[in-house]
Image (cartoon, rainbow, N blue to C red; front, side, top):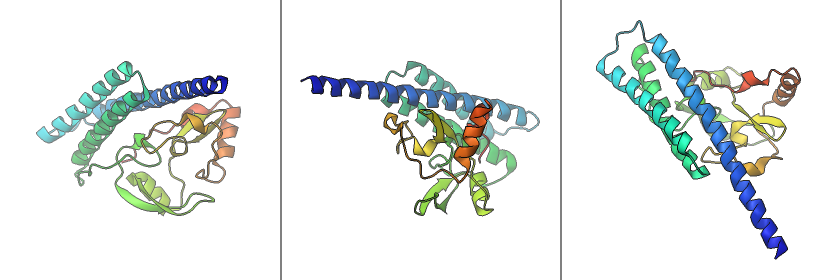
Length: 217
């Protein structure tokens, strides 16, 4: 009986931790989208917006505002999925504005970039082999696709797990939610030297600049 109560308590604590971490990551994503939309506003001040661009821009703003409300009202991990969905809507609408502004092909509605959802929707699939892992096909944004084709490392979002920072895809499940049980995760997808670089930056109190969030489309 004592074992059962202890196991149930541990499960309850794990669920609470999963929600806390998932909400924290979603809060970061909401903040980044807000910053990206502010930059987009400045970038388009000298551009005459047509009706389609105005609609896409308003869709991005509406999704951002809705995500803020949904995050504020979130009470459990499942609620964070609603926030994530709204953020994807906002990132897609933002990508459409940029494509119309630049006169390029409109993006397809796809999953977020594998390496960092803050990059926006993926534009292509590439074959990628993590160190000590097996080759797999992943969906990435244009900039990360260009980096990989040039033999460079992708712009990977890092999240804190325990006392270390790991790639976000190694600390989240297929829904993009933080998995509380990975506190001792063995990360096989970390590029060579990345963890050493992270530890060095932590030692110099400079880790805050490594969370990603650049324009990936």
